[in-house]
Length: 268
Ligand code: NAP
Figure: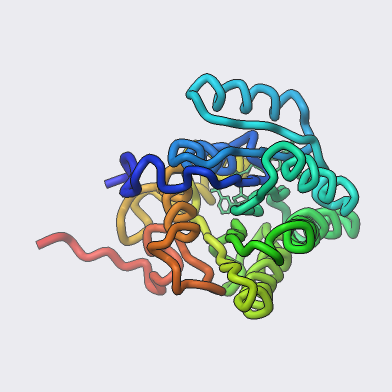
């Protein structure tokens, strides 16, 4: 069954403040919504002001407390400004979700030197920039949570994604190193690795053929995951239910990643 509703109390994150990068669209917006529906005050940050304004209006119309700040996560000074605007407004920052990323499916022969750099800059360096800025300005003194949105395929090989697999492998490594360094500060750091999630820009960018191997019927659960499935995993990881969990890359992919032979037996 696709995710319906939430297993958590509505006020479980009451009083907390959450930053979701790339929170104006796709998975990021749903992660922000889920955190807001459980009491967190939200900040969404990305480059396009019109998307941020529209998403913020949408979330506010659902009675959620949401602010936005424009920012290119490749630029440390812009990232530091996001954190300082959050602290000016709310005086705290408890949850950081590094969701923003770029992607364009292409074979290596068509990924330019600059295209490769851009993806590593956004996905990996951007994640580092936001993590470091939040750590230095607030988390180091107060503890908190970081969740990095990773991907499902970087431990295997996959066509059309050399730039993304390289960047996301770095994100997974960064997740573990941050978890080890930040554990003594009361900061848990984990990652969520979504499979192909329905109704997202990420999945839409792939061809029909890729879509077929990414979801519906080809994973053990037999259906494509939803944005809510990913958001629910984030809720779990930043909740006390996961209080002893850190440094993990948590796959939310219907079992696709561990399904070596893709053989389906008929149900008895
Ligand atoms: P999406 O809608 O394209 O979201 C990406 C977000 O990142 C956008 O809001 C974009 O906003 C922001 N962004 C991109 N470059 C940025 C930059 N330099 N600075 C700040 N923000 C930037 O994609 P999605 O499918 O929801 O993916 C969200 C996350 O899930 C990504 O980390 C992706 O790798 C991961 N993921 C998705 C899937 C899937 O099935 N969709 C599967 C595996 C992993 P602006 O353009 O306005 O900056």
